[in-house]
Length: 346
Image (tube, rainbow, N blue to C red; front, side, top):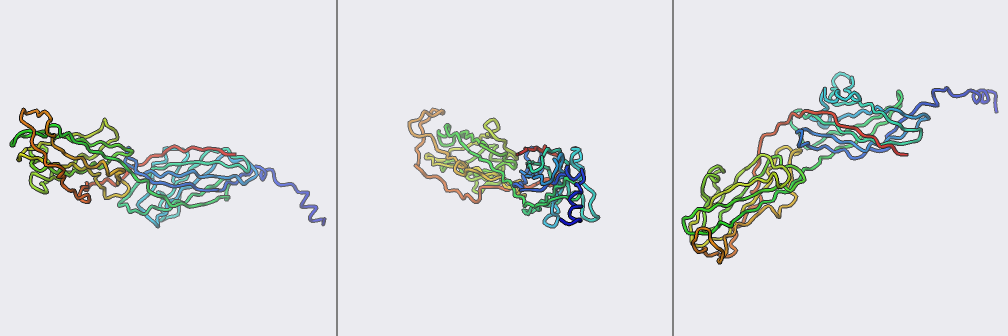
């Protein structure tokens, strides 16, 4: 061993070096942007973000920067004041022209021993400025634990698709009588979930052959596609999940023939021009309900003998024309900070 080597070996490392942590990002989980139907805002959910302490000392905090890539889309931003309600997060000073609304620095308390790992999930509500395309900005995540030591990884978010299952039923128990009688026909639409049908639904109502739509309900619908026979209506701006929120209306049919065929009521979730608010139907099979007249032998409520039934003459529907698009989207969304949770490992 040379004198120089021996001298170097005899020099002990500074005390502070033995206690310095160094956090690195092991992996980034899925990043998902979803439309919050409760707050009418966009929520960015990150996680799990797995951190490893490769330093010699224990880590007691982690500074994590979230950055939205404005080169992809400048419409999605962290609002200038939203996360300031959480003392752990702030919008940092950035070079002129970049815009602090695209950055969020959050300081989280952690307990990661040397060589250990921990995972975190984080949610931030986004502000949407101007129009929104389908492209979401890349999210860059940077972690810092001690001065210049840092690690960076990026992830491309995906949209969480909203889905609902609207089911329609009809009550045709009153569909019998004499020519000239007017009978009630109630229909009910129920949202079986899981999401709220935020923009409501559209209807196609086709009267059974031998009858005509009449009354006040039909008068509030769009001009009939076929006079007194086929109506296409937009109805109800929002349908919550569950039977307690079912929508029921009663339309009226006038009997104009001694024989009555079968009609239909068809429901379709209304579309939305903003992709993030669009709700898809999980089960198209329950979107159509038949209107069948009372069969011969049933007891008529009017006292007249039941009218003959013409068989299975169900009018064909054009499914592509079922949905009516409801316009009007408020695109400026307020945001607030959501809870961050850590799960330690090792």
